[in-house]
Length: 327
Image (cartoon, rainbow, N blue to C red; front, side):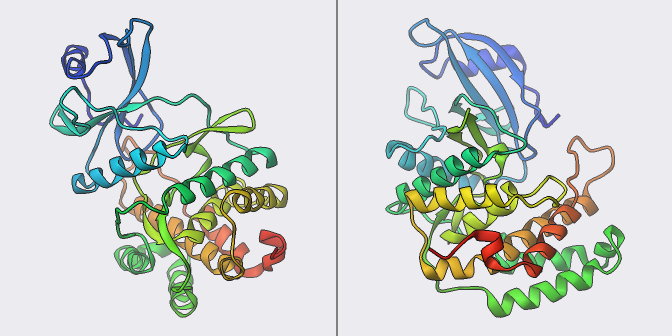
């Protein structure tokens, strides 16, 4: 269970008095997620007809200084029609609060379920939603550097060091070789903007084949837009263990993105390298957590080798098989 900070019901009821959301009916910790403490909160609603929210308490991995960026971003793209959970402001207009010694926020609840095995229609809708988000964020003035970009990969690799070989013999050298390749081939000149940077299936709420919401923007940052699509490709088009590439899901994902945002010839040509970078990024963050998370921790460690398999697949497979045709 990923609730690190316990909030007593009496404390939560007092906290909700700051808002026009009615009174507390129920609250339940949400097990999903590893970064923050999250609660599903039901109230009577401002009009007495009931309302539901997500309460998030920000734990150590989230820099409080970044929260205004996330809040302003979701307000911005939400006002332009993107299905994102906006932050609820209290009667004084504040969105960021303090609760139980942690920065906290009350957030709009969106209906939908996260799918484990996306279908091509669901992947097409998700790709289209990513494109819609990129369009809506084009005139957003906020910026946040990507600390998990190429420079961050080197830091992570150094922090893991020889311990990488305890995960799999030869993994450290494989990572060093890939870092050198990406340093030489990373496409720096591509169009940049705000990206989600973590749009896995569990961060997309589906209503059947349609997207009901995009959630968990706490890795969002300013980077190459097409890199966001490459991250999604790795997350959506393989089995959880990094095997069983699904070409139909891949083609649908790319088609959906093209339908709402478009993909330049330069971006398409760069997708194989961007996908390798995305695979290395998640391999390294998972490896770091694998090495440094105690066995009795609340968080379940994710297998780094699932992303090594993706990385090897991207390195060995031609672009057309991975991403479809260039047009």
